[in-house]
Length: 165
Image 1 (cartoon, rainbow, N blue to C red):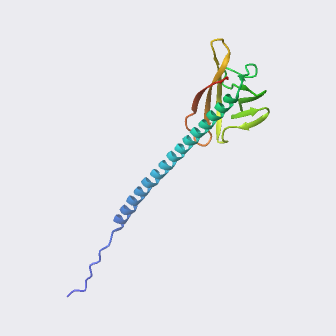
Image 2: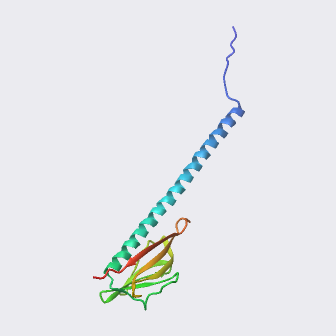
């Protein structure tokens, strides 16, 4: 009878092969995780842009509903950095771009309308005329950009008509 014991073991080559396969699987999973996280950030930023657009549109609509007329003298039409001033109960409400921010000025009280991570690169104001060639409203085109993630610019237009009683 022989005292020979048969030990089974892995060779160095097999060990390196298993480590390499594990490394490839780990790298693939990590790349997928990074890709998913980046797409999630972009989706979250797009949602925030949409919320900002909705807020701006509601703010504009509220101001125009309280408005009596469009101040043609103090508004700037047909330019990318336009301005619209709406006469409200003897005062005014004005939308304009200041240092890349969309601001609302009501009787010298100025408020930012967008979060700091967004900039506005365009505020284009067009007159809306009635049959008597009087300004009854405006069409605004606003271009929002995100500082956080380089996604395409978001451009939206809204039509605001004064309601007179």
